[in-house]
Length: 431
Image (cartoon, rainbow, N blue to C red; front, side, top):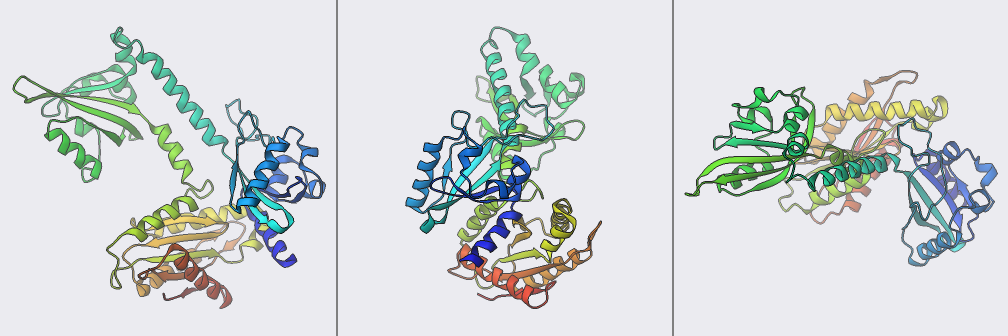
């Protein structure tokens, strides 16, 4: 038990979020480095003491109730850390124009040692996401106010709504000021030109083909599209295109209304992205993995591979050079893998120094060769202060009846063997 707890504490120290262990009476048994840094309270000061002695504003009864629920159901629960029901107050040290002085927290309570009535509390800083949501809500409120007077005031429409009118051949006949200003054009540059020449879209995308089909059927289309401004900046637009028909039901013109949803897309991206490496996070990887397992066309001759990569001696890097250099190593490895994978491959940060990759349409022999190519690419990296870095890989492939847990177990077993057999190597485990 002591060995297991020591191992868990080591893991807690490496996490990039707050992790503490408390019992049903709110006595603190573990307090990781993230919390020490962000709260200013050392672990030796708080461990063994009651959490409420340091944070009297904590809803003690509500928190205890959540702990009991977690222990009783033996499953994680979320603690509502809203303004009306705060958890612990952690100052926000990030330089920002926001008036947000304390972190917005996402708090999860998980069973840890049920026999001792202890739970693990995970704290994630979601302040950036909160700011983006507030910004988006603020902008949506502004638009809602404008919408109440749009019918009465054409000037407001022209200034604030992005609208384009085209003829039946999609040549632009008119635009609002808001549209031309947002995309960086003068109105005269747009009128007479094809709308498709302004918006560089992938004409093979499912969304584009669906739009084309509906408009040809003289029906309205609505959806999201990624387009470019004149300066090549990419933006996301929520779009509605409506055909106007004459008395013979022939298309005379189209009216397109656009709304900038780039902030919304950024929020969506934040929810599936690892903040350090900018790769997919574990949650998104699990979703993609499950989708891939559900595909019906996998056979013994047409399968997919799974790789787990782990930076060798990463703890030594952190202990010797500090976490900032350790972060630089992880970012460099993420960039190297991103540059090496195919467009169809799925790369994510699994946690700590581990990365996972899904390889569609790849048998075991090819998957092992690809993993070795990645290994060699990492071996060529030269990190300032650290020098050369290596990584070990575990490889497996899908077989009929496999689950994510089975495949992860085999790949992890391969990784263990690679570490045991000297590191900086690839080990495959057959189904």
